Length: 637
Image 1 (cartoon, helix red, strand yellow):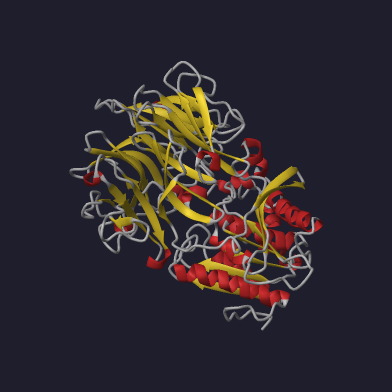
Image 2: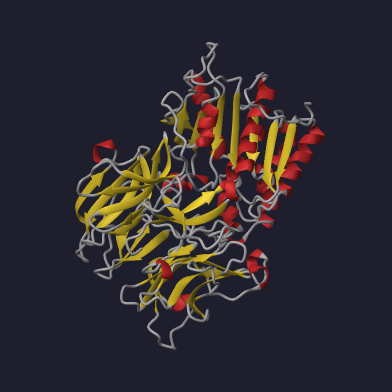
């Protein structure tokens, strides 16, 4: 904004808070990442809890005087300049705000508001609101549906586009794109049903990420009606860029504020990113004609064009400069600057880590495709690698299979310290994009419909067995871990299959029936599509709940859980631990104070990894692990 570059930093060393930073390489107080903190205090935490997963916590105007953010502790919208709240103080963080934009004159914020006056998930109210910056007064602009996202104001300030959907759908299942008039007419209705339906509404199409073109005023959006998330323009029926690839980012819908494309300020061209064979591709096209498809389409990607292997969140600057977050298997997540005309190698403005590693230590993943129940599935294989040590056996290495969270999400090949931790210690890793993952089209994404706990488990097991057959993993030393939904896949693979010898569930789901009745609004009907309607199909829930199949469990399980988790409450881990204790299966439960869904504090992230390594060391009889932490395993020690 105003020629300045900003980014959010998640800081595990500072209790996991999110800090807004500005690029200032010449400032005497700059950090090692060439930025200065612009958050108003050392306690400020720019994070919203709308949908619990948040996103879109910062709102940018024309300069630093017009930047607002959601303060995590109070969930109030505050001015960045001095931290002054502009929304009312409410008991128990009743109102939460996210995914906002500022009007051209800086007087009004348009955003999502989530009302927790009654915290029961079915009673939480989501709406699109307009907030007057001067006095904090609120006007409801769209209401009546269960969820809203991505409110965006037209260039002339008279129309508001937004995405909305209702239970039991998730945003990747079926949504609507609607437009309302906001021209000051007091007769304008706030009822969503009265607003113009632009796209979606058939109960089977997902519409995401609407944006107005700043010059033509045309409304653009992403739809999966072709079978892939492609780009569309309102008023022009076919996709402007028909492709058998997904636009919109790696896991669209989970976080608010996501944007997978933008328009260049110099000439109005479209800039969009998609992934192809594990690599990011930048696509630039002319969209100046409102009644035609995109023209002069040019693609850029890889070293030949000076771009990193993986990138996303493209933000255009002036003079054909583009900014984005990117990385590679050996480069931690970084803020890059790249020029569309020169195509010189992208410059790293800020890197999330000042650590550097030799090529002898970094395991570069290989994308693998392997046979499974519904055809083929995908993953990334990391071989063990550490130039400072020598393997003393001809045996294939132990393998850690990773099941990502979501489950409607995906993994990637960017630098992951949590994976390199294992490969540098002699483990091979398979990071699986099981059926149901994003980035492979709608049909692949929908493989989990009514089949969660079947398809995903088949795929992680088949992936492990494929590597054993290829001689890349030791079949007697297979282990698996996963967080959240990946924790459920982990527990399910251990309960319903006989492939793995040990596993670790991080804030994972053991009891589907408990989750169906005890989670937050956003995901409270997610299981309708993944498993079935509850309680009508309670028998299916019980059949697929690992905690109901303790009799079939026979291998050691480590359970890691945040005490303040509202998505997967701690009682899930506690019930599983109790059941394992009663059966005499080696197990360990570690509860982390101050952690929610996913660990954010450095000491807990480190302890979780070290505990898992120590756990497998005991299970596989690996002695003298350098730096191993002490870990007491129930029913073993």
